[in-house]
Length: 589
Image (cartoon, rainbow, N blue to C red):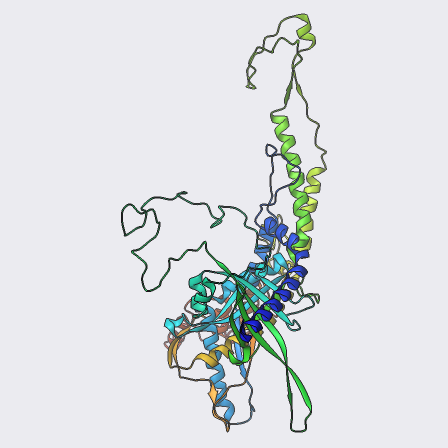
């Protein structure tokens, strides 16, 4: 064994010890995670109930969490880039233009690369498990091969963290475990396939995300189960291989999605020691990424050699931050009321079925042992003998359910509303009484205080993630691009992004532009869309905002074209000269 192989073996053993520590520390949460996942999908089986017994499940958790996530995603996300420069200098105008270009590219990527999907999934994770995880990566296959920055969501089941970490900022290491085919591994690590094909190392065991139904391979019901001989082949007709197109060539193997390998992606925070001219010791942290599979090292690099921000690519969003890495899971608190509601409904349903089809009692001398009895309206049963009349068959009357059981079901339903902070009106129910619009808006805004708190956590997380995305864009937009730009209000234009567009000349060569990313996702605005529109209408009536701001608040389509037509008609005298405020002033005159 060479010195390099010995070093790799020692490194693999150290990495496995770190992973085992993180895995064991997370085990205590996995039972609750499984229960929460099953409750969210309405697939939790009630214990102690036989298969023949009714098992009604009233899904209260799913609509509650869905409404909360929908309210948080209902706000338009705005992205601003603020340049770091002297605002009173002539240089500021130039760098402000670059910052505006960067903000426009960030928002365009947000729309085109569908960052909103990752954000929505992370919010579902935050409600279910207490934490949502973002990962910022560069994908070379996007934008026609030029590559682009991507915001992805990491499944919390596949993420393991330093047991002593209280947040993403103070963790010393983390591990992301991914299932990959050999083809995917080859795309990510081009030189690793040959080594993995002959590797004999074992994967470290861990509990994966539970599958809630379907077959063992795809976890979805197959339309045509079983293998169809000759289906999809372009070779000999006697072949039984499904999906084979000709014969393999150029060392290409068949893609077999069932043959996967676990790849462990470690991010380690190490100390870098250096001394200044006065021999004073300095220690700084430096992130290192190591990818491992089957006991083989696939990648070993420092983060600052991969991108300029030099840190790990992860960010977390918590539903409620209480100083714990995983935060508070909303479904944890909704679980018991949901379970009790299901139990009570099972009792009510079973009692109703016993009343509708009660148990039939007959004695051995009732004279009906040879008579087929069918429980059917109008059926006549003939019995003979005095003894038979004394022991005539009868129904076993089930006990009556207490009248307060429905009140108990309603009580647990109200507990779900209290825990989530969403009332029936907030979730879309029609109020039984006629209320003024302002009253409804006040009720909704009072309930949305907690939602805005979570949106504030989301804004902080997205600011960190978009700063990393911006750094990736600055580093990797090294060729000229003609981009279609999508604005926050739907306007469409195009821009030329030159090579190294955001690099500035200096005495030490070109350096990246310094900036700050600001994200607004709705924490400081009314959460209800109707309340935002009502606020804009009131300000427009007061003359505080103009026509464009009012249309933007309504999110009316083609606002720019409508405003151009309106201004043209005003110049021709075909429309009024202003809004309500101007009409009021004209009436006073």
